[in-house]
Length: 63
Image (cartoon, rainbow, N blue to C red; front, side, top):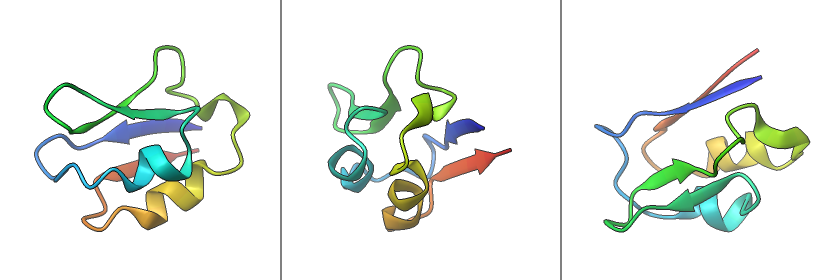
């Protein structure tokens, strides 16, 4: 699994960080970013739910 965040689409709602805090965080401007070493999801079962929770669908997951 590979996770990517489209920074041009992200509005900083924080739903991903709330849903999967072991994978996602927010930068100093409030936009989503992956925690270091978590581009593969780190085995967190909530990654897909975090992507679904994004109100602007800025998170993509590739297998």
